[in-house]
Length: 441
Image 1 (cartoon, helix red, strand yellow):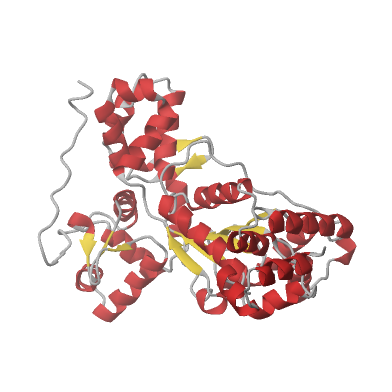
Image 2 (tube, one colour; image 1 turned 180 degrees about the horizontal axis):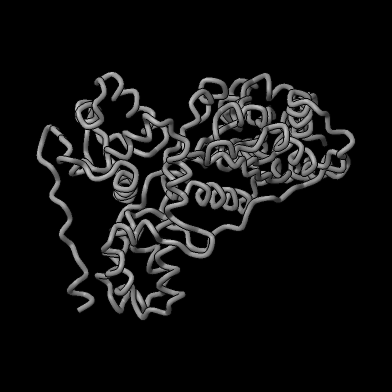
């Protein structure tokens, strides 16, 4: 018996109308009717919903899975598996993982392709999160038709990959012969959408520069999903495709300590547990800095985190963290170079402000600009994730970015003639006096 006939039989046996079953499975009535009459093939997600609603075990799921497998074999579909390797140590981010799961589940009840924009400052672990979630989703049995990955190279000025070139690579990956790939951007985008139609595919677009770069790359088939990472929130994308914004921030202290312990081993961590906490704090709880620091501990065969924690008491030493071809300062430089000169100058000057908290009035006084101009520049810096909203009025510079801005200011602007004003409401947080001097005595 065909899937649709079997579904109608179970539905009528339970005395359910089309509308009643549609409500239970969270699909619209028309969709259900087309499947029952054989006008539309069932997706595995739809079949799972039917099994849950009708209490039929995995009867419908098994049939839908077999139908999809047979269709792929008949059509000679290429099944790409392009996800980069996942990191062995992955800490925290449970809330963001859950949001991505909710977005994936939601597509089963919508004609829209779910698009998530994972955005945040340099080194915060956006790509790591996207790749880890993608591997987990595939491991759980989703996106059976394949996974595509493209590095859009949009982290610096003039480096972004052209969408027309990215589309050529994606079309080759899904099996389009090179001689059948059109020349123009619009034609390539349409061909890509055609080849993904009816597939359950995941597309991960890493390091996007802006919405214009992403839009031509998006599939239109509801079985697909897209995760984009970027150092901005990609303004202009949400209003076009209802993209969901997922901002990523630094790890909390407990998560940072867990990452360090997992990377250097319990023996080294237990040899100086206080140094682990200090090392996490001096790395600003930023995943890239933490990863570079822990590699130093292991590669130098330190018996504990104590020597490196002491070395990183200097802000310059923190900014110079590097291992192999990875350097913390390079990650910050790439974002800084995207700024126009007025924004870059203000960013540098903000690094001089005591306490790291400021508003438009502080910025105007420090930079010698109007308050309106200060608001525009702060908005630009916040959009690039180089400063962060603290409340409705105030912003702040996270620890390592503040050190980076101050270092740039010393090198490019010279020493200030007088202390920069910073009149803000409320008490200033006292500077951290925590030291590892007692740990390294």
